Image 1 (tube, rainbow, N blue to C red):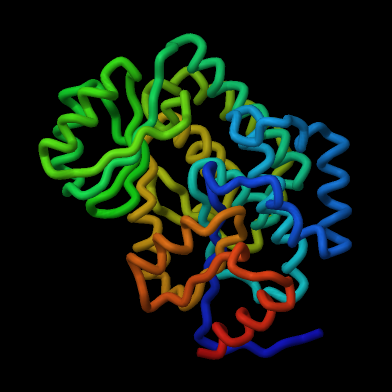
Image 2: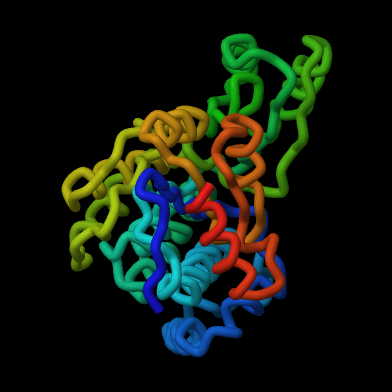
Length: 308
């Protein structure tokens, strides 16, 4: 079925990172025969193995599989995206959505990414991640430096994720509270997007080089630079560097707004990226696939959002 969309409508697809996974995260996609078949294929590769869906080694391929299966379920009625952006492991999924990586390749790379990061955590044990908010980023940065922590992800002007030694986490929490901020220790033992992951960068870049790279149907925003990527060489560089460098997610949201994005759909699981985008750029009509009970509900919302 062919649909007409507003000439000025520009769609952003958002691919989430870890945290929103849950046991029913494949259920909506499974209502599509094509997506269900894709999930069956990924299951034969071992990408959906693992009882503990929160363990890093399982979570990364599971999230990629959930995101790509939702895209498979809705791609027939979704207008071509102007941009695609992914948060942490979601950036790898974004290249699957863009057509650069086959789903099986993306899930396999996610498993390799998790393995390399877990190896870093084993080599440098005692890592922690913490969500911090309520203070301006420069103030947070100064406090982090005093406790040997690094900025992992910049989510807003006063919100971030930080990684560092678990042994210093309690004192960091106290310092943040004394400065008037808030902090939450995350149930993660891998200091993603910090120098703790440096040993994973080169081998992951090599793994990416070995994979076939198809034609990209839309550019992907790179987390470490907030620039649009449309080719393999740059994708390999940006995807590997983000393991050990700060992700500038707030800048990615701003770049999408500057590119004229008018509406955005998070492919799920979860709705964290949709909430962040709606809060930072309320003029961009943003929803998550997780908000809907049916695929037809997503289709109808896309039609309305494109016409607004």
